[in-house]
Image 1 (tube, rainbow, N blue to C red):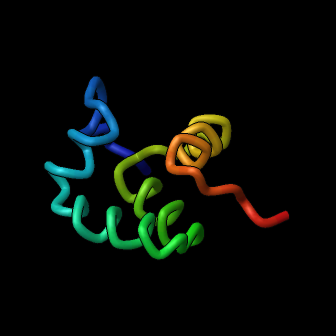
Image 2: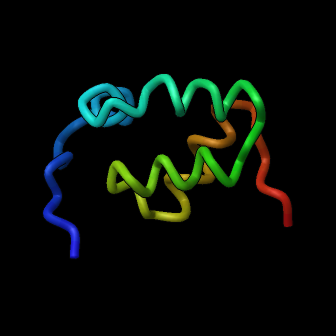
Length: 64
């Protein structure tokens, strides 16, 4: 069950507050899409369309 502790925060704020910013940046740089998605889910970003949009902004595309 989610407690929505990140409600109202931007993605960057969520990553910073959770201490996952460096791990996220590293995963994005390495184009490790699965890891990027895993980290997003840890900061309560679970909406598939939001995740796809973030991947698109990072220049990453999900493998089908």
